[in-house]
Image (cartoon, rainbow, N blue to C red; front, side):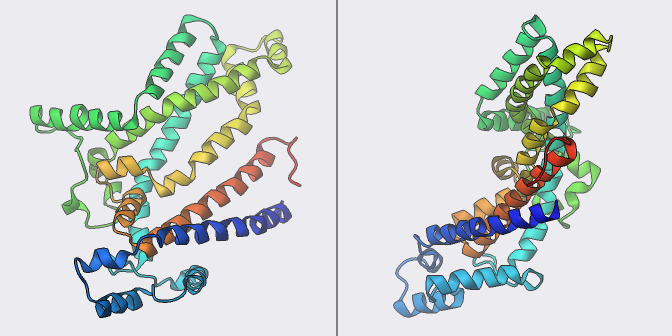
Length: 326
């Protein structure tokens, strides 16, 4: 297994380097110096600012300098152009907020969608299956922005005008963010994260439920299901012991695809609810052409996806003895 992990890691190094290279190349289409200096800056001011930001060097030199800084992550001192603070500190401040929203989202989405998929598959073609799939399709057909706008108005703003003790807030109040862990206080989590989590779960349920139903329907046709039923196993045992165990490969795939978003966050939800997570920080950096922040965050995202892909293969082998890593 360890030989496989090492080989997969080595194979993905060129992919990681290419992602960083293409991103840095794309970012440099627009020069952020002019936006920072305002109208009609002098040539001396432009050159001085470029030198201060390290943009006066050749692109290849900037590329390898950034890679060297990444390798020295324990001494990562790259600073944001816009905020003039270490990017590493910005990441450490943003990750807890993203996890506070996305970890419960992933857990509840997987739990609910797997159970609903199992129930729908075992009632295939009946009214319960059709009703659940109709609700799933309706949920998939509505834009996430609609959920966010309706959720903010009917879930937070309007009730707060009727009830003074309504627990949900429209957005995170910056004045309460004294610590990067402030969202982990139960009262703060309910006020600022519970509604975004419910919206995220609602958006994802339609897609995941249909996926898991398709997987479970395929499993219900297997011989081992007929054998289990012939031996007198109850429906619950067939569903949650026999079938669920043999359907772990696609379930692991689906969950592991979503796992990096636990750290990287949900861009739209974080932006509209003012949650100080990775997604909102990245959007603000893109808007201000803050190259160091965008480059570092994207490198982190790429590394997380590569690690999750390798971990997925390892979990395949642990979940199914028939899978061999080679």
